[in-house]
Length: 494
Ligand SMILES: Cc1ncc(COP(=O)(O)O)c(C=O)c1O
Figure 1 (cartoon, helix red, strand yellow):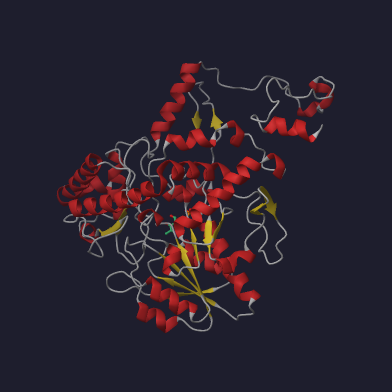
Figure 2 (spheres, rainbow, N blue to C red):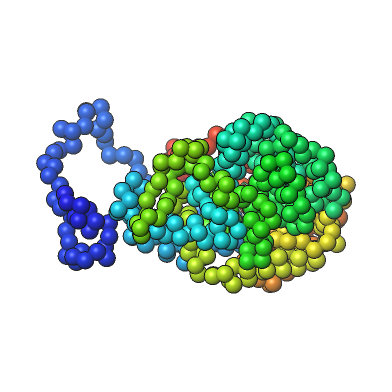
């Protein structure tokens, strides 16, 4: 087949495409039993449920309502930014010219997609104040892994003898886990009374062996780290690097940028800030923004532009190697691209202002019953402490389960570890004042219950399709096979 023919298959707008037919494949037809071995052939038709279209539709609609999701109701899961995913994102990523490209298509057949990814790289870099971005990481945690591997490569290249990564005590668990995976020792630095990074304590632990600092800004307490520029300077004075965990970027879009605060790199959870689906543990994308000094170490291939053509460059001798089979989780990246394009720069800044306003509005409405651990104005989220409820025998997880009875989702209750009985609420900009008022009313109602009838809260949920589950067990022993019941009734998922 000539290369022009190939181009026509992929590029529907190419001249001469009209009326074009795929070439006939020169493969003689064969009955299946001639091609497959006997033992691989079925003796009888498979036992499949026979159902009509309305039954199939009802089945999936019913399934979609059994679990909670952001299209159903409020979902203020702190640090996870469960914002609404506009359907426009879906339209763009499903365009046949984008969705139909094979991941291994040669560069000349994927110029449109590569150009779009290249442009997106530049836009993301501009948003976070970095020199470039790697689209490879498939999650925030993988962005961290890439970042710390780049730190290691940077120091090895310069023959620096580095041993430790410093991490504040308010950090998400993936931060220390990542640093350890890459072979560093972790040093925890305590936060100040007001919850912010303690510069004095940081000075005590920074030394010539420090490889880097992993810092989340705004922090998981929903606080802006006002001394971040000084902290970055301190790290740079020992040739250490600053890794910013950008999980909470939703509070900074168009207002300030990690690169301007001295950070050398930042991961961007597209499935949080840029409204792509979280999925069940995926699919996600955690692109990593970096400063120019780290560019030689980026994973391959890197999309580069030469003479108006886009190429996949793998000839990079100092690269850490491959991180992702292709150049990233493209379906997710396209959705985020649609989101950013549809909002523009001013629109993005409005998103962050809205997220901050909503968080402060809700905090003020409920703080009497849900006292804030670190009082003051917050950014995108705030963390309450439910210690007074514990005296009634009620734990934060009980309140979380009771919220499900009201058809709304719970806040995060598993971290930050420095807040006892924490309750981390991130409403996002997606919620209207009416929905925030309703959520506040439900929370106040549950607080009343804790005082007057704690047993009802402790035994919640009461109205969900299933009660309390062994979530860790279910995640580790996943069984999703459809199984007909022996008496011929409706089947179930194990
Ligand atoms: C502060 C912070 N850092 C890192 C991560 C990890 O991101 P991901 O879930 O995309 O791997 C999370 C996830 O919740 C987070 O909240």
